[in-house]
Length: 274
Image (cartoon, rainbow, N blue to C red):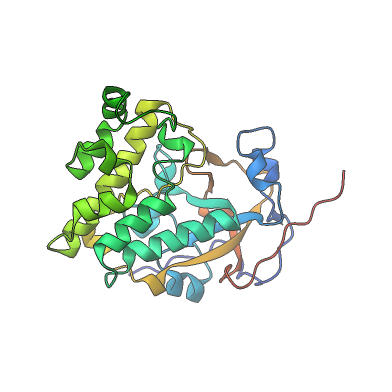
């Protein structure tokens, strides 16, 4: 079997190579994502479900190179050829924590789904397009229409249950198998997308995971396999923006890793005062 050729020199961990940058601002300045990189936690952070291999090789590969389907990363013709990056560490840590929780097969499903709903800020986040000033009794029909995607995913049209993460978790109970539990979470994840699109919810940095991997692939992921790496990107190269998931995507040839464990060791962006 042919070995992949290293595209860039081995990374000097902790150093940014000449001609590369860790600051995403040049790619998002003047766009809807600019505000998300104007803090000290800005950078290029990739959440990987294969941290051990990434740390051993010091490289990131695209989904097409790895011949695997995706845990997220958005759509588009070029997406399989690119690697996606969160633009601040807080978002990456939130995503990694959420993914570890879903991958933890020891966690009771009721607890997992309740935590998942709460971490995705359901039903309160503006992304889901659910008005907070509607009354369950007076606006029942409107709420029923708004919540239709979640009702279809969870098998209940009880509005009070649909608006209460704890009640919804109790309604769903404990699925008979880990595969069915995963499929149920994936259905809720898809319902989040439908909620936002149907109800005109905010379409920037939606707080959801994007569970699109088949169970056969996802079940092999262990919480300890999930990690965050930090990269430097070749200056001025083209990128693909995914504002919905608060990401930029780049071709692997334009990426060099500068931290193999960004939860412990990060290079901070430094900008000249204007």
